[in-house]
Amino acid sequence: MTSRRWMIAVLLTLLAFAIGGRHHAIAADGAQQLPVPAVAYSARLAGDKQRARLIVDFDKDVSYKITALKNPKSIVINMSRSVFSLNKDATDVPKSFVESVRFGTIDAHTSRIVLALSSSAVVSRHKFRTLEESNRRRLIIDFVAASDTQFASVAREEAVPHDGAPVEMAGPAKRAPGRKFLIVLDPGHGGIDYGAMGQQGTAEKNVTLKFAEILRDLLAANPDYEVRMTRDDDSFVSLTKRLDFVRSKKADLLISIHADSLRQRDIRGATIYTLSTRGSDRLSRQLARKQNRTDLIAGLGLPELAAPVNDILIDLTRRETRQFSKRFANALVLSLEQGVRLISNPLRSANFFVLRAPEVPAVLMELGYLSNARDEELLKSRQWHEMVANLVTRAVDDLFAPQLAEKR
Image 1 (cartoon, helix red, strand yellow):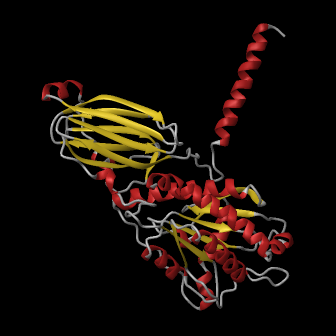
Image 2 (cartoon, one colour):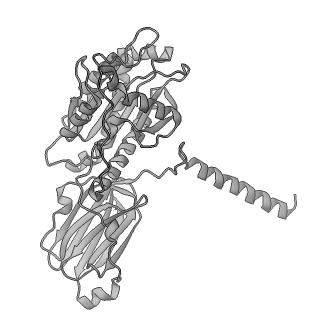
Image 3 (spheres, rainbow, N blue to C red):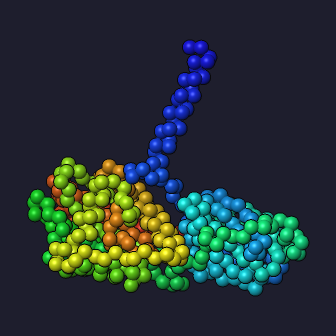
């Protein structure tokens, strides 16, 4: 082969890899899959009128850029996409040249921290490092008081865009000091609503309740968790009441539990769903439509959809919540892989009504499918339930581990 042909062959191979790499970044519904964001789970500002230091702890590396702006006078830290799960200390401001601290999501790729200044200050140094005693990544930024002339020499003229300004947010998984993480388990169906039925007569409502009880007991053994259930007996609870329960309790996490049936009896394995209005695939959309109509069995109408709210705070909170939901879904799949058969492409999304609380991270978990004979056998087994519940508990622990580490 001539050198020219060899070079062409190499280029074609590299092109094929590039196209393949982009292909794997595309979801089933054609949308680009974004990388899992970092989680900022601790932040604090300390200092006086002469010096100040901002410390932010993340669970993974982030890229960042610091900019001083003249209008309004502020210092802005733009960073790669991050989710803020911060306590009140993050917005406590000492008596310094920093007037307030805000943080939030700017777009699909960028998050931002804004320090509004009451007087001029400049960055003296900054660093990003890994703490040796833990898996934390720590961003440290030091500021010093400066003259207006010094500040003007490094600041840019443009203002922080109003439509992209971050706001202080309650956010998912944010707790008052001393409060336990509240986890709500939602056993699907119940009462007059049997849900799916297996070929051997196994009712979905019984499977979901039995599994939820086992999972509840495992989670409740952790002193950092409080566990509630949308139903703890064979009673019917409407979708609206389930959602109202989750929101009224200000839950930190919702796990809705199901074991549905499909026309394709060869499909089996667990599936994890997060919320999306479109749905990742046809099967997911079909299941969501089916679940959203369960109230009709009890003679109720379809649950009403909330009117769209044009509020940046709610919109940002919804974005943060979805990122937490996806983060937990990923952790759940990784844990379940250790002992559970999973459906092909187990991470999916659909417009399930019960997942629609904008401030509560939530997943819907299909333990398996009662339409499949092998799955039905497993879904009747208490030993199998206990094994799966242990794997789910492990994923919950992984989700809350960063904040629990900070608490200790």
